Length: 171
Image 1 (tube, helix red, strand yellow):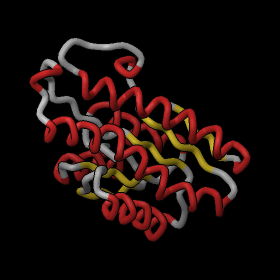
Image 2 (cartoon, rainbow, N blue to C red):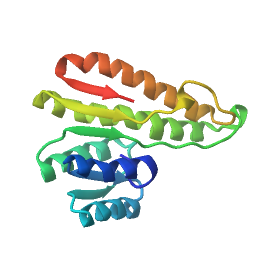
Image 3 (cartoon, rainbow, N blue to C red):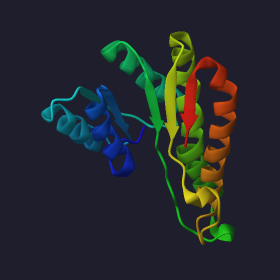
Image 4 (cartoon, helix red, strand yellow):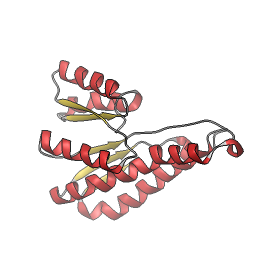
């Protein structure tokens, strides 16, 4: 998820070099389309999808698209993130919930919906984009820092739980 720009777009463009077909999912369908088109123009296989990584049904639909279009799901990259800078005492609950949903809950949903598919295959790789912000504080980014700390620890827990299933999970 969040493959339309930055780290997500760079990774999406790199995966075909390793032989992977890619589902480029992003809240901006236009950006997702542009990345998928550039992959296809380079000879890779890609499909784009406008999706909200914090919405359970959208994440489930994205996993189904990968399976329907390409027949399997080997790698899941959870990359959605959002920061809304403000001093802690000025963060609204609405802003806090949005940052946590996009940055942390999306990672939970991505893993939740791809793990059964990977377990059934007996292997898989999940990459969750974390940040140094999850290990230390940044001024005005309390909600983002908390979300990225959650990504780091969620990833560690999931890696322990799924090692016996031959599923590698890393930040």
